[in-house]
Image (tube, rainbow, N blue to C red; front, side, top):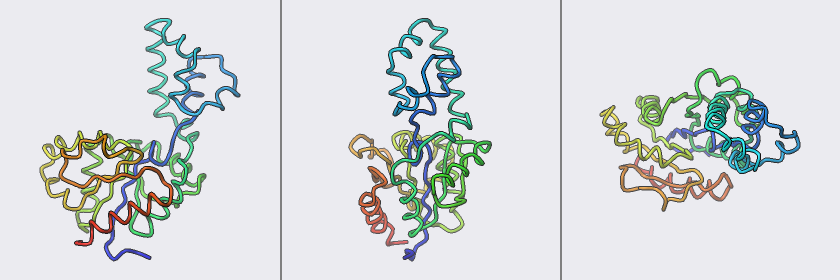
Length: 236
């Protein structure tokens, strides 16, 4: 059942609903001509795990040039459509987004640029996410605040920003409101949700808006979050 106050859930993508297992490892291995078998690459569970392989450590430590090449390959991987297509959905994320849609609108606010949108939409369809949600490209955390504010200013609706990079968003807030003073009113209807991040690790006292946590996309975590949000937004 729809809540009587419309809300926008502005959901991040990378490491919030999509996660890398071996896509980065495969891309970098191929770019640097590292001799890993497909079986080894497919068994890797994360980029961090790839970086801990003895062969990768040996390559990077062999010379400054090797380390520079590794870093360059990583940067290229971040904008590779092949890598984006090879990401995995975080457990429960698709159902979680469907649940959020029962309480408000959902759009994706992401650092991915416009050239990645077709691949991103295809990935969402492949992994059974709700079809054709809006994707808003934000080149940095400052723009993520401004874009979500501007896109809801006419309706004055509450905005729930769900992001794994909550610490960086918190750090960016003072500079953001300095850059765009109009955002001084935004905390009245903004809630930041730290995905997968314990609240006790965040400097909550440095921002004037509520900061909540969503440990995972499991149903009980989503329901607990929604209860908190609905209690906070009763005044709208």
